[in-house]
Length: 144
Image (cartoon, rainbow, N blue to C red; front, side, top):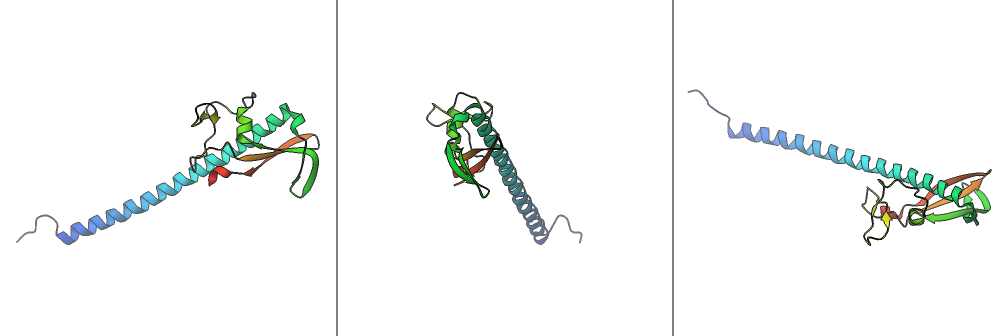
């Protein structure tokens, strides 16, 4: 007698193998997606730091606070800014493609791609050292 078709055991084995392949593929895809979102966030943080430098260069009189950066103390050469302050200024320090309308419909907003939260309350510190302005991201509250 000749067999035609597959046995139930053979079909179940194929289904199990396919399920394993799909599971492994989906976890890899999710990991790649999460890594990409983190890279986008790092790029946005770099953009925020650059925007803060430009803002401080345009408004040098704001550097009136004292601060410690990398173990060095700076008297009257620092300022802590929120991302919202930089966005709301008249300087257009972010390209319009990076900004979206906020929930209140009045302000523009920058969104953390990892969490989907607003970055308006995130803080960046600008400081002057050797007549050059630097910035460092202090707190990314939007990651919470």
